[in-house]
Length: 284
Image 1 (cartoon, one colour):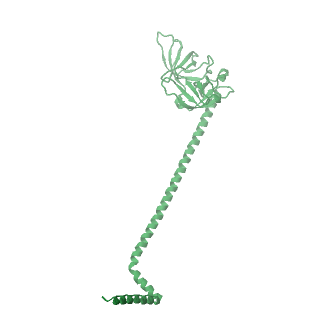
Image 2 (spheres, rainbow, N blue to C red):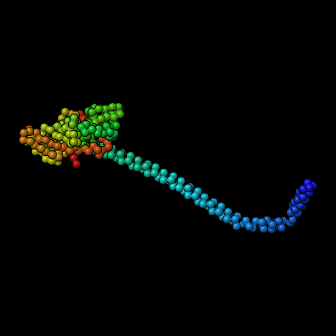
Image 3 (cartoon, rainbow, N blue to C red):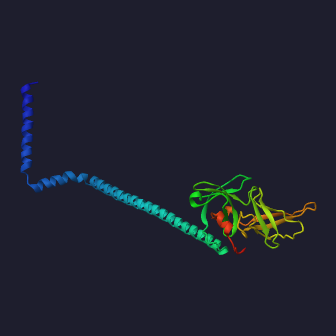
């Protein structure tokens, strides 16, 4: 093949393209627009679909973003509502506790004329053993409590402080087998000794067999020995047994205070117990 011929063809093509380019530059604008429209017309449906699809997804994304925003706001509102409800419950509980303590002191003041103020204590622990019956209170030596102080609920006997630390104390309950409370039957005025029993009740000892005792008779502290103030409500007689060979009756007593149902108690200092006088006897 002749090399000069190949060079001639390439040159001719280049010259042709240059002429076409110059011609296109000189074509009026309205003609070039028509050409663009003609070329673009077959692509118009495709462009329309792409545009519609793009708009569809944009709207969906906007809606999803709005839903997410609303969900986040709802979660925030739910959190705020949760904390608000908790705050209301705490305030209601605080009010209830305050009222209970106020009523406790009021009941104590109503039943005696001592000028001394009792110490309000919260129950913070229980002895879970079957034989020892005691509670832990949040009052100790720094509050003025000491071993031997009487613990009451209203005008009813709970027990006596058996051990005390700086910020807490242990109270041996009237239901503890080691507890002994000088007491008397309210109706007959007969004295005896109330001792705790393992089953959560109490036993009144040393009541002579000839003394008439009925179920539901009330038992109060006698004040003998000065360990407890007089006329505190101990409990009610629930069973009376008498054996012919015994000199004394077997009297079972249900304590007035159900320790599992109370949260607060009052501590009466020992010197107050010794000086306490003119106690009213009110039993409901």
